[in-house]
Amino acid sequence: MRQPHRAILSISLAVALTASSAIAHAQTAATYDDLAKSEAAANADNGKRVAPLKSIGNPTADVSAEMQAMIGAPYPPHFNADPKTPAEWKELIDRRAKLLIAGIPALKAKLGVKVEETRLAGVHCYIVTPNKIALENRRRLLIHVHGGGYVFGPGEAALPEAIMMAGFGGFKVLSVDYRMPPDFPYPAAMDDAMAVWKEVLKSHEHRRLAIFGTSTGGAMTLAMVLRAKDEKLPLPAAIAPGTPWSDIDKIGDSYASNEWVDNVLVTWDGWLGRAAKLYANGTSLKNPYISPIYGDFKGFPPTILTSGTRDLFLSNTVRTHRKLRRAGVIADLNVYEGQSHAQYQFNVDAPETKETFTDIARFFDRYLKQ
Image 1 (cartoon, helix red, strand yellow):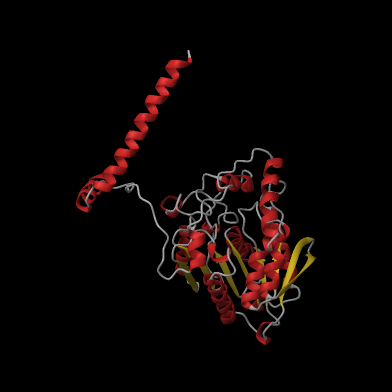
Image 2 (cartoon, rainbow, N blue to C red; image 1 turned 30 degrees about the vertical axis):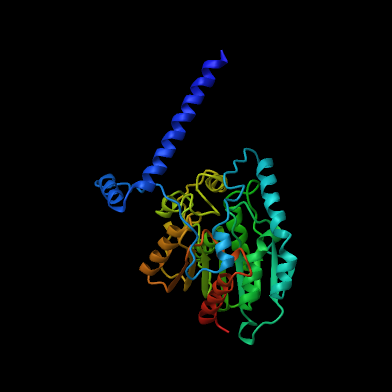
């Protein structure tokens, strides 16, 4: 009974291999003129674009060796993780957190900062203080909301970005360890962040405050300003939403154009989209406090955004930038050659990392009162 099945499988495999070989040969043998004609015919009608199968090498021009190594790295092993239960989510979250926490002591020592735990408005937080603070920064404070798809980065695992901002920028940073799924879906994270913001306003002038964060933290930075506006609270003097998850749904050109090219997030259809649905917990993905691109940006503080050309969230970042500019907001946009999602903060020794945080620090220095 099994022999015919093996024969069919063998034939199917042979056909597949032959077809694959033929495609590869055709690509090698085809001249540019042939390719141009076939692509013109394939794209003759309005609608979806059809591109030939291709591979993309590492960028070399104006990209450091440290960054090239990250750009060329394989996909992370968790990119297609599909936890089915809260216990499975927690196991994945804890496993990834341990990897980040292991590097914290060396990062603190290298950048010359100290970290202290505290609670504000009942929310667990960390205060990150550089060993040397310039006179103009002594009354300034940055509020940090970490990234991680609303599921990753609990506790100390959220600190690398805050440490880099404090170390490279010379600012005191308050990092919010907000509650996350699977136990605490929306709106727990936003409620925690806003509780901290209200508490900080009691002892700090808002013109000396800024909010920053990357990815999820970028979305939360934008959403915090929207909520502050709605609740008639003072706004920060400036914000820095790095590659913000401003549309949590799979909407935006780079969700398609950079899919399988971004070697950090890889695709919305892996763990990322599953985390989005877990966090929203039935709330509309177009709720502006979840997808702030659908909010009103009028009156926002000066904003600096950062992304990369291979970033799955490049469209999120670009759409946010354009909407801010259309609302009359001062908005800078830095896009790095070849970088996938948030790679500007993955290696403290990469020149691009220092460049990114120095740019943000200078932007804050321009708009925060001393």
